[in-house]
Image 1 (cartoon, rainbow, N blue to C red):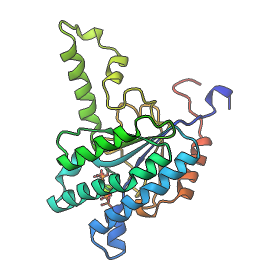
Image 2: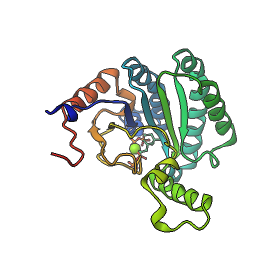
Image 3: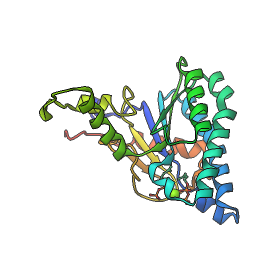
Length: 235
Ligand code: IPE
Ligand code: IPE
Ligand code: MG
């Protein structure tokens, strides 16, 4: 391996999938699966923070997840609300900064408020940045970015729009692209996650269902990542 393609890692993103199947295997309701899944977040955040990786993005709720049964959606919103409130002291103590990525305005107002308070109380923290993708969709993010560029610039001609303009208007503006994207739960698809940002990300698919995903599993994903060669189109 030449020195320039030895991987470095500053950003991990995780598609936390498999709560429902975990519940069904354990004879529990889907909501119990989401409860277990939500409880599992802290240990993984802790591990990534200990490893001094600068950014972690977790996919908590997609723009497509609104199509689930009403009760499951409202349970998820309540669980996320409780989790943000419960974790706030921990996040502050661990010097973790939280950033929401996704569309806030269609979330329940109590959840919007909790997210805002969490972002405000952690905004000066200098350790891990935890991006919480909640009501997030990659296609909407790109479309919104282009709409913002056009609406902020009168008389813009199409060929004046640059990659940088698009990047600057994504929810993830200022955050490096994910080096490694992990999907738990066995499915091998992207499900509208970080479409723009993942152009050159490495993928790791784990069969472990999210509520069972441990620090050892994330270590394994990172070890695998370090065995890869990233070429970015070069030789
Ligand atoms: C991931 O688990 C959580 C969300 C998408 C909100 P799922 O609920 O998708 O679990 P499975 O895929 O049905 O097992
Ligand atoms: C992706 O999981 C979204 C989250 C983990 C929040 P889904 O369970 O919604 O994805 P599909 O429907 O299997 O593609
Ligand atoms: Mg799923």
